[in-house]
Amino acid sequence: QNFYLRAYKFRMHVCKEDENPDFTYIVKILYNMGTVCLKMGNLKGSLKYFQKARAMYEDKRGRHERNEGHVLLLADICSQMGSVLLRLKHHGEALQEHHIALSFRKDVLGYDSVEVSATCHHI
Image 1 (cartoon, helix red, strand yellow):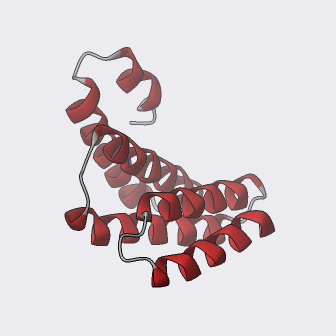
Image 2 (tube, one colour):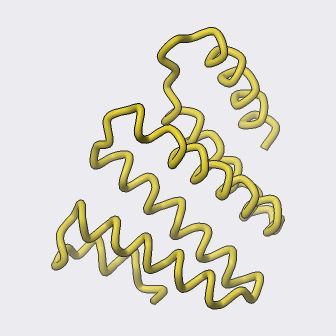
Image 3 (cartoon, helix red, strand yellow):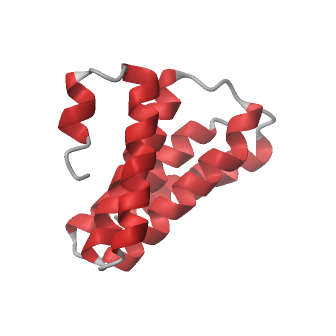
């Protein structure tokens, strides 16, 4: 977790000086920090990082090209948030996040994709 936190702080410092920062890289760092917290059993910390990653992506996506990779990353974030919310007993919010993830994956991969059914089995 400390590794990702240091990488995040460094990247944020670089982004302040860069006119065209790569926010996808920062979103991935936050996603990884959320995943580490989840594996350590820190559900609230995990949720915080996933929410921050999603908010940063949604805030910046209008300024950058939106490609399939970005949409699938956002789907992964929503799916992980849904899993965390489920473990926190926030069932309605968890189901909503899983449906959002399903929608993004169907848009990119197609309705009949095996990957969609394999990654959205939570619903």
